[in-house]
Amino acid sequence: MAVPTTKRGLLLVNLGTPDAPESGPVRRYLREFLSDPRVIDIHPVGRWFLLNLFILPFRPAKSAEAYRKVWMREGSPLLVHGRALEAAVAERLKDDYEVALAMRYGNPSLPDTVAALRAKGVSEFTVLPLYPQEATSSASSSLARLYEVLAEGWDVPNVRAVPAFHDDAGFLDAFAAVARPVISDARADHVLFSFHGLPERHMRKSDPTGRHCLASQGCCDVLTAENRHCYRAQCYSTARLLAQRLGLPEGGYTVAFQSRLGRTPWVKPYTDVVLPELAAKGVKRLAVMCPAFVADCLETLEEIGLRAKEQFVEAGGEALTLVPSLNAHPEWVDAVVRMVRASDGPSATASAGSR
Image 1: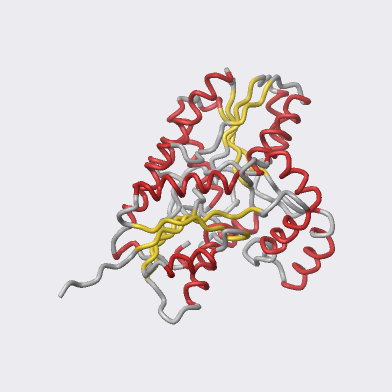
Image 2: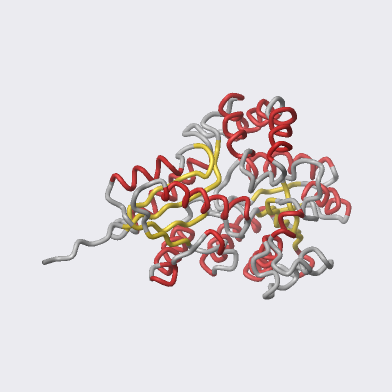
Protein backbone atom coordinates (compact mmCIF):
# COMPACT_ATOMS: atom_id res chain seq x y z
CA MET A 1 0.00 0.00 0.00
CA ALA A 2 1.45 3.35 -1.05
CA VAL A 3 2.18 5.84 1.70
CA PRO A 4 0.60 9.24 0.93
CA THR A 5 3.14 11.95 0.30
CA THR A 6 3.31 15.04 2.49
CA LYS A 7 2.20 18.21 0.76
CA ARG A 8 4.55 21.06 1.57
CA GLY A 9 3.92 24.79 1.61
CA LEU A 10 6.41 27.62 1.29
CA LEU A 11 5.55 30.92 2.94
CA LEU A 12 7.43 34.00 1.76
CA VAL A 13 6.81 36.52 4.53
CA ASN A 14 7.43 40.25 4.35
CA LEU A 15 6.52 43.04 6.76
CA GLY A 16 3.42 44.52 5.15
CA THR A 17 1.76 47.43 3.43
CA PRO A 18 -1.55 49.33 3.55
CA ASP A 19 -4.27 48.35 1.10
CA ALA A 20 -4.42 51.83 -0.42
CA PRO A 21 -2.51 55.12 -0.20
CA GLU A 22 -5.24 56.81 1.80
CA SER A 23 -5.47 57.82 5.46
CA GLY A 24 -7.98 55.13 6.46
CA PRO A 25 -6.08 52.10 5.15
CA VAL A 26 -2.78 53.55 6.35
CA ARG A 27 -4.24 54.11 9.82
CA ARG A 28 -5.42 50.48 9.99
CA TYR A 29 -2.02 49.25 8.87
CA LEU A 30 -0.11 51.43 11.33
CA ARG A 31 -2.39 50.42 14.20
CA GLU A 32 -1.68 46.74 13.60
CA PHE A 33 2.04 47.31 12.99
CA LEU A 34 2.77 49.62 15.91
CA SER A 35 0.61 47.67 18.36
CA ASP A 36 3.10 44.82 18.14
CA PRO A 37 5.11 44.71 21.42
CA ARG A 38 8.13 43.51 19.45
CA VAL A 39 8.02 46.77 17.47
CA ILE A 40 7.24 49.30 20.20
CA ASP A 41 8.60 47.43 23.19
CA ILE A 42 7.36 49.59 26.03
CA HIS A 43 4.71 49.11 28.72
CA PRO A 44 1.31 48.36 27.09
CA VAL A 45 -0.27 51.44 28.65
CA GLY A 46 2.50 53.66 27.37
CA ARG A 47 2.28 52.06 23.93
CA TRP A 48 -1.48 52.70 23.83
CA PHE A 49 -1.07 56.37 24.70
CA LEU A 50 1.80 56.81 22.24
CA LEU A 51 -0.12 55.16 19.45
CA ASN A 52 -3.55 56.70 20.01
CA LEU A 53 -2.60 60.20 21.16
CA PHE A 54 0.57 60.98 19.22
CA ILE A 55 0.93 58.70 16.17
CA LEU A 56 -2.46 57.71 14.75
CA PRO A 57 -4.04 61.19 14.88
CA PHE A 58 -1.28 62.68 12.71
CA ARG A 59 0.94 60.15 10.94
CA PRO A 60 -1.58 58.37 8.63
CA ALA A 61 -2.23 61.44 6.47
CA LYS A 62 1.49 62.16 6.11
CA SER A 63 2.31 58.54 5.34
CA ALA A 64 -0.55 58.28 2.86
CA GLU A 65 0.85 61.27 0.97
CA ALA A 66 4.24 59.54 0.83
CA TYR A 67 2.70 56.28 -0.39
CA ARG A 68 0.87 58.12 -3.18
CA LYS A 69 4.21 59.29 -4.57
CA VAL A 70 5.41 55.72 -5.16
CA TRP A 71 2.15 53.76 -5.56
CA MET A 72 2.13 51.68 -8.73
CA ARG A 73 -0.79 51.12 -11.08
CA GLU A 74 -0.98 47.53 -9.81
CA GLY A 75 -0.82 48.59 -6.16
CA SER A 76 1.74 48.91 -3.39
CA PRO A 77 5.32 48.41 -4.67
CA LEU A 78 6.10 45.96 -1.87
CA LEU A 79 3.10 43.83 -2.76
CA VAL A 80 3.61 44.08 -6.52
CA HIS A 81 7.24 42.99 -6.30
CA GLY A 82 6.35 40.36 -3.70
CA ARG A 83 3.75 38.86 -6.02
CA ALA A 84 6.30 38.77 -8.84
CA LEU A 85 8.78 36.92 -6.62
CA GLU A 86 6.03 34.56 -5.46
CA ALA A 87 5.14 33.69 -9.06
CA ALA A 88 8.75 33.15 -10.12
CA VAL A 89 9.58 30.95 -7.13
CA ALA A 90 6.32 29.01 -7.51
CA GLU A 91 7.19 28.21 -11.10
CA ARG A 92 10.58 26.86 -10.04
CA LEU A 93 9.24 24.84 -7.10
CA LYS A 94 5.86 23.79 -8.49
CA ASP A 95 6.62 20.08 -8.20
CA ASP A 96 7.56 20.31 -4.52
CA TYR A 97 5.81 23.25 -2.86
CA GLU A 98 2.64 25.28 -2.78
CA VAL A 99 4.17 28.79 -2.66
CA ALA A 100 2.42 31.79 -1.15
CA LEU A 101 3.30 35.34 -0.15
CA ALA A 102 2.08 36.61 3.22
CA MET A 103 2.49 39.83 5.18
CA ARG A 104 3.10 40.11 8.89
CA TYR A 105 0.79 43.14 8.96
CA GLY A 106 -1.93 43.94 6.48
CA ASN A 107 -2.83 41.79 3.48
CA PRO A 108 -2.36 39.08 2.35
CA SER A 109 -2.45 38.23 6.05
CA LEU A 110 -0.73 35.28 7.65
CA PRO A 111 -4.01 33.75 8.93
CA ASP A 112 -5.70 33.95 5.51
CA THR A 113 -2.64 32.65 3.66
CA VAL A 114 -2.12 29.73 6.03
CA ALA A 115 -5.82 28.86 5.79
CA ALA A 116 -5.64 28.87 1.99
CA LEU A 117 -2.59 26.59 2.00
CA ARG A 118 -4.13 24.19 4.50
CA ALA A 119 -7.29 24.07 2.34
CA LYS A 120 -5.02 22.83 -0.46
CA GLY A 121 -3.83 19.99 1.76
CA VAL A 122 -0.55 21.49 2.94
CA SER A 123 0.55 19.75 6.15
CA GLU A 124 4.18 20.84 6.38
CA PHE A 125 5.48 24.42 6.13
CA THR A 126 8.75 26.05 5.20
CA VAL A 127 8.88 29.76 5.94
CA LEU A 128 11.34 32.25 4.50
CA PRO A 129 11.17 35.59 6.34
CA LEU A 130 12.24 38.08 3.68
CA TYR A 131 14.55 40.02 6.01
CA PRO A 132 18.27 39.53 5.32
CA GLN A 133 19.39 40.55 8.81
CA GLU A 134 17.94 39.23 12.09
CA ALA A 135 15.72 41.53 14.13
CA THR A 136 13.12 40.82 16.77
CA SER A 137 10.81 43.43 15.24
CA SER A 138 10.80 41.70 11.84
CA ALA A 139 11.82 38.03 11.63
CA SER A 140 11.02 37.08 15.22
CA SER A 141 7.68 38.86 15.11
CA SER A 142 6.76 37.18 11.83
CA LEU A 143 7.71 33.72 13.06
CA ALA A 144 5.99 34.18 16.41
CA ARG A 145 2.77 35.22 14.67
CA LEU A 146 3.00 32.29 12.26
CA TYR A 147 3.38 29.83 15.14
CA GLU A 148 0.34 31.38 16.83
CA VAL A 149 -1.72 30.96 13.67
CA LEU A 150 -0.64 27.35 13.15
CA ALA A 151 -1.31 26.52 16.80
CA GLU A 152 -4.94 27.56 16.42
CA GLY A 153 -5.61 24.38 14.44
CA TRP A 154 -6.17 20.98 16.04
CA ASP A 155 -3.13 19.45 14.34
CA VAL A 156 -0.01 21.59 14.43
CA PRO A 157 2.13 21.01 11.32
CA ASN A 158 5.89 20.77 11.11
CA VAL A 159 7.56 24.12 10.38
CA ARG A 160 11.01 24.81 9.02
CA ALA A 161 12.34 28.37 9.07
CA VAL A 162 15.04 29.51 6.68
CA PRO A 163 17.54 31.50 8.79
CA ALA A 164 18.64 35.08 8.17
CA PHE A 165 20.66 35.31 4.95
CA HIS A 166 22.73 38.45 5.50
CA ASP A 167 25.89 36.65 4.39
CA ASP A 168 24.36 34.22 1.91
CA ALA A 169 26.41 34.11 -1.29
CA GLY A 170 23.35 33.97 -3.55
CA PHE A 171 21.73 36.98 -1.87
CA LEU A 172 24.96 38.98 -2.06
CA ASP A 173 25.72 37.99 -5.65
CA ALA A 174 22.21 38.96 -6.72
CA PHE A 175 22.41 42.39 -5.06
CA ALA A 176 25.84 42.98 -6.58
CA ALA A 177 24.49 42.02 -10.00
CA VAL A 178 21.68 44.55 -9.65
CA ALA A 179 23.95 47.29 -8.31
CA ARG A 180 26.99 47.01 -10.57
CA PRO A 181 25.51 48.50 -13.78
CA VAL A 182 23.53 51.15 -11.86
CA ILE A 183 26.61 52.38 -10.01
CA SER A 184 28.59 52.41 -13.26
CA ASP A 185 25.92 54.28 -15.24
CA ALA A 186 25.53 56.82 -12.41
CA ARG A 187 29.30 57.42 -12.38
CA ALA A 188 29.05 57.29 -8.60
CA ASP A 189 32.09 58.43 -6.64
CA HIS A 190 30.79 56.91 -3.37
CA VAL A 191 28.30 54.25 -2.26
CA LEU A 192 26.09 54.53 0.80
CA PHE A 193 24.68 51.34 2.29
CA SER A 194 21.53 52.50 4.09
CA PHE A 195 19.89 49.92 6.35
CA HIS A 196 16.65 50.22 8.27
CA GLY A 197 17.31 51.49 11.77
CA LEU A 198 16.26 50.04 15.12
CA PRO A 199 16.24 51.45 18.64
CA GLU A 200 19.51 50.86 20.48
CA ARG A 201 17.58 49.11 23.24
CA HIS A 202 16.58 46.41 20.73
CA MET A 203 20.27 45.72 20.13
CA ARG A 204 21.04 45.50 23.82
CA LYS A 205 18.08 43.24 24.56
CA SER A 206 19.36 40.79 21.94
CA ASP A 207 22.86 40.68 23.45
CA PRO A 208 23.14 37.36 25.35
CA THR A 209 26.18 38.58 27.28
CA GLY A 210 24.72 41.93 28.32
CA ARG A 211 28.19 43.39 27.87
CA HIS A 212 29.15 43.45 24.19
CA CYS A 213 26.44 45.37 22.31
CA LEU A 214 27.27 49.05 21.67
CA ALA A 215 29.96 48.85 24.36
CA SER A 216 32.68 50.09 22.00
CA GLN A 217 32.93 51.98 18.73
CA GLY A 218 34.08 48.88 16.87
CA CYS A 219 31.73 46.33 18.44
CA CYS A 220 30.17 45.53 15.05
CA ASP A 221 33.35 45.51 12.96
CA VAL A 222 33.68 41.73 13.01
CA LEU A 223 31.10 38.99 13.48
CA THR A 224 31.95 36.96 16.57
CA ALA A 225 30.27 34.45 18.85
CA GLU A 226 29.10 37.38 20.97
CA ASN A 227 27.40 39.39 18.23
CA ARG A 228 26.58 36.82 15.55
CA HIS A 229 22.83 37.45 16.05
CA CYS A 230 23.19 41.24 16.31
CA TYR A 231 21.23 43.12 13.64
CA ARG A 232 23.72 45.99 13.43
CA ALA A 233 26.73 43.66 13.20
CA GLN A 234 25.01 41.69 10.44
CA CYS A 235 24.31 44.93 8.54
CA TYR A 236 27.99 45.88 8.65
CA SER A 237 28.90 42.37 7.52
CA THR A 238 26.49 42.60 4.57
CA ALA A 239 27.98 45.96 3.58
CA ARG A 240 31.56 44.66 3.74
CA LEU A 241 30.73 41.60 1.64
CA LEU A 242 28.86 43.67 -0.96
CA ALA A 243 31.70 46.18 -1.11
CA GLN A 244 34.11 43.34 -1.82
CA ARG A 245 31.95 42.06 -4.66
CA LEU A 246 31.62 45.56 -6.11
CA GLY A 247 35.32 46.28 -5.81
CA LEU A 248 34.80 49.28 -3.53
CA PRO A 249 37.84 50.51 -1.59
CA GLU A 250 37.57 50.90 2.19
CA GLY A 251 37.00 54.64 1.87
CA GLY A 252 34.63 54.26 -1.07
CA TYR A 253 31.54 53.39 0.92
CA THR A 254 29.70 54.33 4.10
CA VAL A 255 27.16 52.49 6.26
CA ALA A 256 24.19 54.29 7.82
CA PHE A 257 20.71 53.60 9.23
CA GLN A 258 17.44 55.21 8.17
CA SER A 259 13.79 55.47 9.23
CA ARG A 260 14.20 56.28 12.91
CA LEU A 261 11.06 57.15 14.84
CA GLY A 262 10.66 58.95 18.15
CA ARG A 263 13.17 60.52 20.50
CA THR A 264 14.95 57.48 21.91
CA PRO A 265 18.44 56.67 20.51
CA TRP A 266 18.50 54.48 17.43
CA VAL A 267 21.53 52.73 15.97
CA LYS A 268 23.98 55.14 14.40
CA PRO A 269 25.10 56.67 12.16
CA TYR A 270 21.84 58.12 10.88
CA THR A 271 21.36 58.29 7.10
CA ASP A 272 19.88 61.81 7.18
CA VAL A 273 22.94 63.01 9.14
CA VAL A 274 25.46 61.21 6.94
CA LEU A 275 24.10 62.62 3.66
CA PRO A 276 25.14 66.27 4.24
CA GLU A 277 28.41 65.06 5.76
CA LEU A 278 29.25 63.21 2.56
CA ALA A 279 28.37 66.26 0.47
CA ALA A 280 30.60 68.41 2.69
CA LYS A 281 33.48 65.96 2.15
CA GLY A 282 33.24 66.45 -1.60
CA VAL A 283 31.11 63.48 -2.66
CA LYS A 284 29.24 64.62 -5.75
CA ARG A 285 27.62 61.54 -7.26
CA LEU A 286 26.25 59.18 -4.63
CA ALA A 287 24.75 55.73 -5.17
CA VAL A 288 22.59 54.34 -2.36
CA MET A 289 21.95 50.66 -1.75
CA CYS A 290 19.37 49.45 0.80
CA PRO A 291 20.35 45.83 1.55
CA ALA A 292 17.91 45.41 4.44
CA PHE A 293 15.09 45.35 1.86
CA VAL A 294 14.66 42.63 -0.75
CA ALA A 295 11.79 44.50 -2.45
CA ASP A 296 11.39 48.17 -3.23
CA CYS A 297 8.93 49.87 -0.91
CA LEU A 298 8.16 53.18 0.78
CA GLU A 299 11.50 53.19 2.61
CA THR A 300 13.54 52.78 -0.56
CA LEU A 301 11.50 54.59 -3.21
CA GLU A 302 10.22 57.55 -1.22
CA GLU A 303 12.55 57.92 1.77
CA ILE A 304 15.75 57.42 -0.24
CA GLY A 305 14.78 57.86 -3.88
CA LEU A 306 12.93 61.13 -3.28
CA ARG A 307 13.61 62.70 0.14
CA ALA A 308 17.24 61.66 0.56
CA LYS A 309 17.97 62.69 -3.02
CA GLU A 310 16.54 66.13 -2.38
CA GLN A 311 18.48 66.48 0.88
CA PHE A 312 21.78 65.44 -0.72
CA VAL A 313 21.44 67.86 -3.62
CA GLU A 314 20.45 70.71 -1.30
CA ALA A 315 23.58 69.96 0.75
CA GLY A 316 25.81 70.44 -2.31
CA GLY A 317 25.83 67.03 -3.97
CA GLU A 318 25.15 66.73 -7.68
CA ALA A 319 23.16 63.50 -7.88
CA LEU A 320 21.88 60.66 -5.74
CA THR A 321 20.97 57.40 -7.47
CA LEU A 322 18.94 54.74 -5.73
CA VAL A 323 20.03 51.21 -6.60
CA PRO A 324 16.86 49.13 -7.08
CA SER A 325 16.23 46.31 -4.67
CA LEU A 326 16.24 42.63 -5.64
CA ASN A 327 12.49 42.47 -6.34
CA ALA A 328 12.12 39.45 -8.67
CA HIS A 329 15.57 39.58 -10.28
CA PRO A 330 16.43 36.14 -11.73
CA GLU A 331 19.55 35.76 -9.58
CA TRP A 332 17.48 36.50 -6.47
CA VAL A 333 14.92 33.91 -7.52
CA ASP A 334 17.79 31.44 -7.89
CA ALA A 335 19.03 32.34 -4.39
CA VAL A 336 15.58 31.90 -2.83
CA VAL A 337 15.12 28.50 -4.45
CA ARG A 338 18.55 27.37 -3.28
CA MET A 339 17.96 28.56 0.31
CA VAL A 340 14.61 26.79 0.44
CA ARG A 341 16.01 23.54 -0.88
CA ALA A 342 18.94 23.77 1.55
CA SER A 343 16.45 24.07 4.41
CA ASP A 344 14.94 20.64 3.65
CA GLY A 345 15.71 18.05 6.26
CA PRO A 346 14.92 17.29 9.91
CA SER A 347 17.73 19.46 11.24
CA ALA A 348 16.21 22.58 9.69
CA THR A 349 13.19 22.76 12.00
CA ALA A 350 13.32 26.11 13.83
CA SER A 351 11.68 27.63 16.87
CA ALA A 352 10.82 31.20 17.70
CA GLY A 353 13.55 31.34 20.32
CA SER A 354 16.24 30.60 17.73
CA ARG A 355 15.52 33.88 15.95
